[in-house]
Length: 516
Image (cartoon, rainbow, N blue to C red; front, side, top):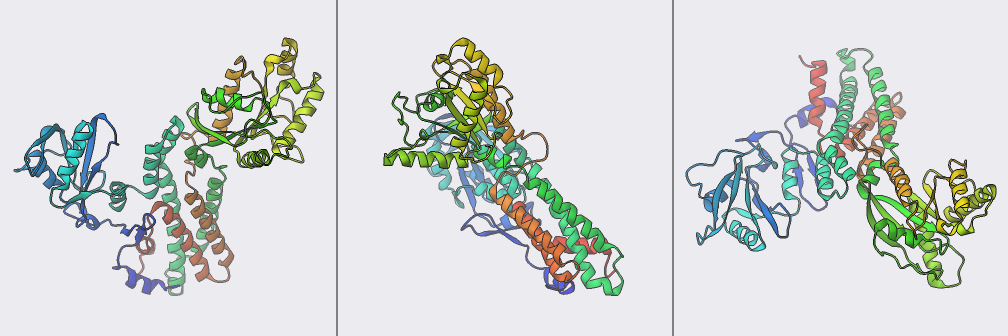
């Protein structure tokens, strides 16, 4: 490990750390210095432009320009030859072609001088009519302005990250917000983009940097009696507390990731139980073929649903039975595989096959569950719902008795009696399904922010392992113990995109006033 004194002289004036933002992309420096209001790393960047409002016909389209030559685009295309318009003020102007001077459209222009823009650079927005011909003409005209080029995918957001406007978690939240399809996804993405998750990780990172600074100072300066007694004991407590907090954060049952990607709900059961009919009812269209012939469904049929604001990927599967047909056997294998991967399984039963006696019906359903879920012991009931279909074939008294007696029976999951033929019970079933999905996803607006990305989980697990390294070497090799804390800081920095030795040095000299 590099001694602190040499680390100070070697890094104090060294280049700022870099972060690789995407596979194959060049590394970007995390800079705080500015030149004429523009972050130093952006001062000599290209000026880029792109349609920001999405493709297709619309009433208004927004074309964004970002970079040092943004003002030039206003000069050439909006006639601002003497001075720039007031910042962040919409002005109605004629948008002209800089070569032919032809008027392309009349629209609003806005000027965002650096650093007060989304990207941190000088930026311009053209709000034009959203017809394809207008958009194409304006983009071609921008391409003829000296110093401008079309933006690459995600380049505006990359520049915002480079300028320190957004951390990596905020960038990911912005991407999730753009792709959000349900209300719960929107809420989770907005909370992450607002910085809640990034603030949590940054707080952990700051505390770990302080621990590392104290350990480094103890290694280099304890012999000079410049370090107070009990510093390492304080580090021990902080590391233990942080490790416990991160472990609790990891025990979220993948709620945030599940909400981001969708809850995997699988319909499973014996042949001719009405699984495909239930799928069609839930998605309100004939997504799967329904037939009285057993074994009609051979492959997995998927459809995406919005269940009360929560994203659901619903899968209908082949009926589970022994078969000599090779195609059907492959369908059964795929059905079993989907059940194993499911977040929630809807186990569909043909009510006509239920014994009339309640005790016998309970025993039948427990055995049926074991068969569908492939469980030798008592099947887990917290990740499945029992759907008793075709209740219209039962006598009214038997149906009422089953509904009354099967509620809250120990060893059975929630039981829903439905008829896909008459729609009876479907409303109550949807209420139970929504409650189960909500439990699996959690409420994104309450409690601590949850993990939303698999990479977050991987880096946090590495952080916990690194803190265990500190604890393992604390009493035998303090240098290796410090390296464990350093690895933990690096793991958190890979989530937020911010990590550097300069911050650790600042803490050391602030806390201990060494060399005063």
